[in-house]
Image (cartoon, rainbow, N blue to C red; front, side):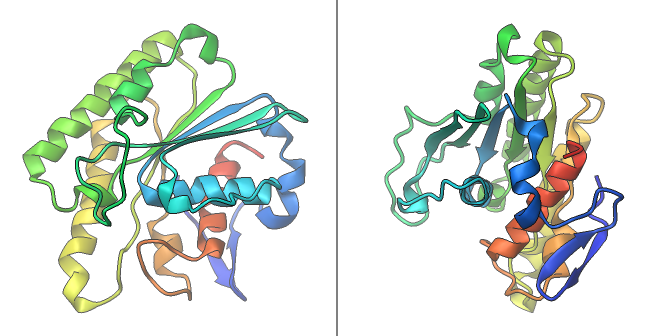
Length: 236
């Protein structure tokens, strides 16, 4: 799905008949009632988890850098939001990760059961940790994700699955190679998952065109813009 829109006064305006400001619409997102939203990926996906819960009225009070497997339930409208970090052998900032509590995307997808079909939405976004991987190793990882998605399609043919793209890491000449590779990772995974009805959320241009500092963990307003694209696809 293309991120067609524009920034005005620090807010993203999507070019859609359903356009609006997510800050003011979040209380009316009735399409999420009874849904189980599973977010899987790195710390850029964890930003979705923290910002979404903040918008829904339950801000995360703990240090988000230590959140690797978390879940918040909203009983008033039966919304369930989960975040699951994908495993790494060594955290780049020396933070302990309990590998028994996190899952690779393929493993997470294979945990989907028939009774999950009606209410579950899955968002995966594996990219930032793979910039330093050998390309063949990443392709093996990506093909494992394809096997997981293929399994879900057999069990739950209509379950919504989203692939959130990477974004530019730093807008400086010395990071050109890393930026190029991060983009290639997402678009290669998109191609590998083709034919399995995975919705591709291209957030690259949202980040690149913003007037906020370009970095790995973008400003909250940029995360809201990415979530707006996601909700537009859900017809919220």
